[in-house]
Length: 629
Image (cartoon, rainbow, N blue to C red):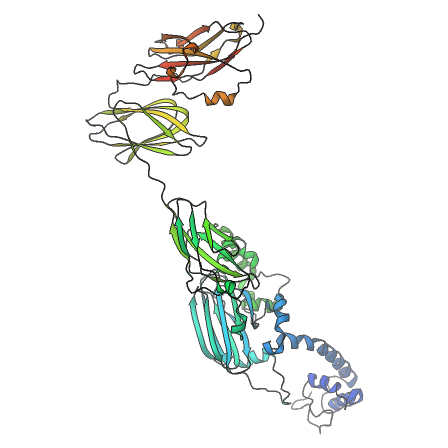
């Protein structure tokens, strides 16, 4: 084409009158009045009038290819660009096909969409209202971060078609026409509440919804409808949408709420979901699910790859109209986001869906702990939910145990439940330089803690008999905490005294086992030995015949070291004797027990009795006489 030339320099013919572009040539080719011959004449006419870049044959072939391509793309572009409206009856198909508008900036009428916002990257959605005085409702649900959003409207662009065909302009053309125009703002909001815009009479126009997250990358949901009265996809709340705490225990909380009218009156399928956590109440079920799935949130966010084009990134929040998106480095920013999410610890959050009941008891809670409770009514047909007004409650404390008062020099028996604890108090009436605590654990080991006027002095595990001597202080008060075993209940005896010479418990060797000599075993006797101490004590030995199938479990049940000789039958007593040795290495005594039956099993017990009369039992020993001698 030469300078100053035009496609219409020559006198236009019937078939070239409207030719101003390649698209017009394709349109002309389809006209019956022109046909293929008229189309060829037009091409030659264009060449003769200065379009001499190609010869006629080249131009003809190029136009045929262009028109064929245009005809293939025409149905596709008309489907994706034309504004969907309720009147066009395309929405039921679109709603069923969620992928249709997953990446679309068009909000379908009567369907909820879920999408994703990158921090500080605004996103814009469009929808059209074709007639004045149309009802309109728009709902925006933030999930895991506050949102800033604004709804505005602009007049529908005038039809620019010279033919006046009445066809609605493609959406992209409408958007381009309003890009530089400011619409009328209808509503704006900033926060993390589920917020609504409702109007019973809205003007016709092209509506745009702008969203922004300045805090972090986040999910959100949007719902818009021009028939709010008939749709009602969200469950309706009762006149009193509060959750009542009807019962409160140490580990349980009972909740009650009024049913949704959507279930009781409209008979739609509604189920209730309870959310329990220790941090705060939630404003939407979307926020709960975002929190529960925070570790997997990066997998849900759009990531760059071979399956995404710049157009896709534009709909996910990335700019694509210039090179700034490329300069940002999508892979780098995405991996950073992934690290942030994976390093975030999981919260103690639980969601329980309980069907259509309106009373529920939450169990397995911790005593004296504050919990937050949220209730959501979920329409199982639409999977859309509405939040009741959340509440919170603190579970009751553990029952305060009575503190046992210890008397100076007196042994006190203590029983502790499995994993339980007992508190004791010792307040000497006179000044003292030292205080002695003697503890005898009858069964498994127990933990003892001693505090003086709030200061921790001692914390130890005790098995058998232990003695602790602490420095005294005038007018001091001692608080003793005893914690039981995890295996089972605990029994113990404890003595506190300010007189060091007053010892009710006998001293024990480190090894309290009884040894039997197999070579000295006969059909009627066995010989055993045990260790003593440097302190002179009284030792008593007892025997009891048991069955041959006597096992370790039965033996364990009889290992209560606090049961003294007074609990035994007189017939079981073998003998008592005093024993000690100044040389601790030679503090060993032996004894032969006679008068036994051949081939029988016996359980032997040795008791050591202290000066105060308190006894401690050594570990029981199972022996068996020879059957043949």
